[in-house]
Image (tube, rainbow, N blue to C red; front, side):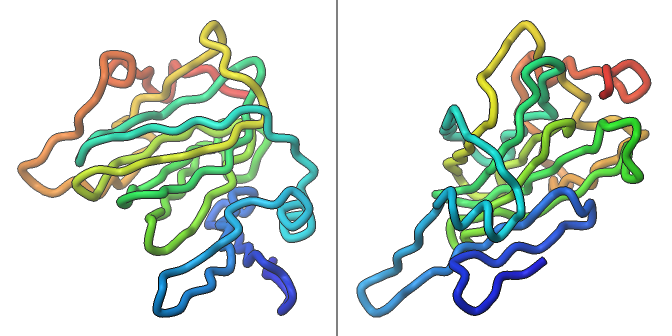
Length: 190
């Protein structure tokens, strides 16, 4: 799936085809650059998805902060994620039991320089690791945050085995909730 020459978006399936890498056109000159970061009509046309975003979230994090692997059991959320300052390694895990990619993960570097966005469908655990000194991470969701149905897969589960790009001698900075994420054999799935 790629954009036609008139499209404002290039869309490429990730290694898990339901996860999409969305690249808006960036127009630049000696003054700087401009991009239309989201347009509902262009998004629907380029992705074939008919989704309604109801909430925007914005986080600021320091280097080696790892947030994830989050999802909601009820009020499942599709997410369109991007970075507006710095860079992150963004990872998703397929929790859909009937999927051919069940239990698989995919990771993509998102940055303020590459302008890439990632479509994370409902039914996936999601998280990111900050690679730059700091990063600002923005995402749109298709349903509202529901703390009662939130779940967290362990970011370092050996069964899933996400290859986080953490250099030797560094440790991920985690909050208590993320440090207590459940292992693959205990985490609720869809």
